[in-house]
Image (cartoon, rainbow, N blue to C red; front, side):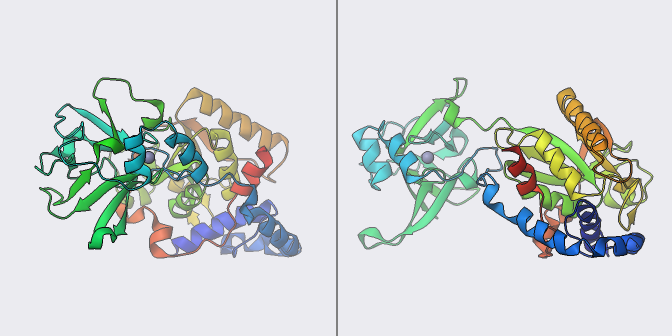
Length: 378
Ligand SMILES: [Zn+2]
């Protein structure tokens, strides 16, 4: 398989065209090598500038369930803690424990979510609550493993595992390995660390997932494209898959024949308050060569075509506007071949294609475009 090389070459070639670095050109582009050589020293300088991350917004951390779980600063936590009752403050900020059978949520059997009393992050659900008989609210799993962090607690001459809110570090309680199926775990909570929001009532804004948007990009082999999108601030998930073809549930082997009509694509779910669709699209045009028709570097076939597949008419208008702008500004020496259209059904690729660059440890030697895109936007 030469595809990792292929994608790096494909990306590197385009970036080179934009006075960005080449990571080694494919045979197909060897005729351009000479022209590139004299700009290499400038390219290297540009690369250095482009990969400087100081202009980027700080990277946010998102959970798979779509919440912003970027750790809050001590100042932010102190501000939030001002609203707490003395008991909630003692438990969450000073690792206190409420007396057994005294908390108001021990016997709560209503359906709903249990959120952090400090920052509002949903932590546990009534679906995993059980009666442990201990006198503290008990659950066999959190709503999202990323929402609850763990650390060793050696206080009181015992070694226990303390649990904390992953966003605001509030002390919640402890987790023990004597719980029921399916996890065998018992998350032992203090009622004072939680706010219960009954099913059917409106969640507070701090307990809502972020309002994400989705867009799809095809830029040749999806391994490297997915990786570079994952590097962008504001991107929650990037997933490799197939789309814009005719066959339902296509396999990689079927798409590889070029007969299904699908393009290897990346589904990008993002936080529009951090990065806009327009900025993602600008980065996309920097990370591959949009002038190549039905290929990227040595990867040839309609499955490797360039495409922006839009979730909304607004995205479609933005993408068409960007292509027109890049064309009028003569950013490329040849016409842009990128297919711009509304997204059809996206089929996730097989698991072994997901996070391929991370899994294999292969390093993409080209700079990523996000400093350039987001820096310019400021
Ligand atoms: Zn919290």
